[in-house]
Amino acid sequence: MYLTAEEENVLDGEQGETLRKAMEILVALGDIYGADGLIPVKSAQIAGVSYKTIGDAGLEWISDLEGTVKVPSILNPAGMDMLRWKEMGIEPEFAEKQLEIIAAYEKLGISSKCTCTPYYLEGFSATCGDHLAWSESSAVSYANSVIGARTNREGGPSALSAALVGKTANYGYHLDENRVPTVSVVVDHELSGSDYGALGYIAGKEIGNRVPMFHLASTPTSDELKGLGAAMAASGAVALYHVEGVTPEAKQVNFDKPDETITIQRSQLDEVYETIIGSEDDLECDIVAVGCPHCSPEELNKIADLLEGKKIEKELWVCTSREVAQRYPDVVKRIEESGSKVLCDTCMVVSPATEGHNCMMVNSGKALAYVPGMCKVPAKIGSLETCIKRAGGDN
Ligand code: F3S
Image 1 (cartoon, rainbow, N blue to C red):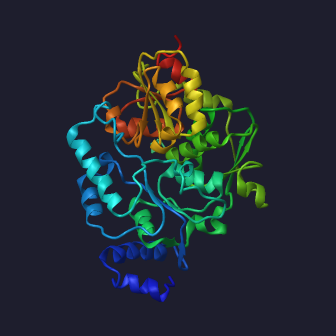
Image 2 (cartoon, helix red, strand yellow; image 1 turned 30 degrees about the vertical axis):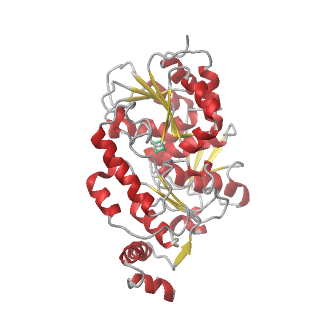
Image 3 (cartoon, rainbow, N blue to C red; image 1 turned 60 degrees about the vertical axis):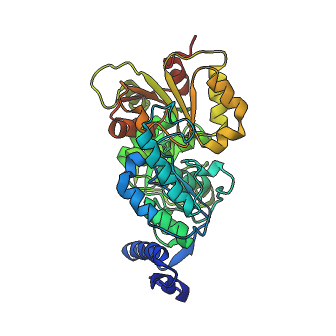
């Protein structure tokens, strides 16, 4: 891989050990994947934040790093709401380690606004064609597909390396030839809301890591696209998809028709809605969690409208980023008046606080795919309206 004289200099350790290590990671990836060189990135999003997932080894690795990131950089959700962790039932030992992890990242100049939807935040918006180094799979999918920006599905260390160097290796989804659809997916019935998550849950398993071109009977909103991409990235490894007539590249580029076509029937979606993932028993869900990926302002508003004048009976989590929650305090207040919790910085999957529940009801295909394995809690998907009803919010 070609390196400029300055990049060689960094690789030789002339600018310190942290940058040397970061450059070494980028060059190793570039060599493996045949990159021609490094390209500048506009921002970085770094996964590997929850103490639940990275543990002491991860904390030690981050704590040893020195220096300052070169581009706006932000963290993925952590294991707890930084302000309300006690209320979530998080143990003080866990909280202490989690705060240490956040402090270690902050020392490097990384924003501790932990979220999987950085594109809603000031300083992290992206536009079509921008090169990024993001690592949370739903954020990667949204950036590539809905925005038309370009990012590989970075691992925590490679995103951090890109943040420190301000560049990433030019391979994978940064290149036109890897953004061409390789499979068509046809859905000839109308979809709305959580249907897109259920569709993504099914489609991801069949697509694996290919690039699908969807032909849909209805036009999804950006929130629905967010749910579709998140689910496909979880049940499969889809990092980029196109929707005919909707997503930017599908509108701009005249792609050839892929050889293979997958058709997804309404009955397949119905089956996902009827199944409890992770258990054979017909369990009663004792926790409901929405906001995977983190809620947009529109989704928060919709939840507030559905909860208006109601009191919920079960635990109901609404996950979003702190910045979005702080922007709309009245909406948050309207939601919480029902007894629900608007939790920031974290989510139902990466927090240990959901473990030990009987069954979780979600409106997200990604949470459906991950909660049974990562939280050891069986999960069931329903529409947002059904989730609110199951929480007891139909009184
Ligand atoms: Fe975000 Fe957590 Fe879902 S990181 S995409 S809310 S699993």
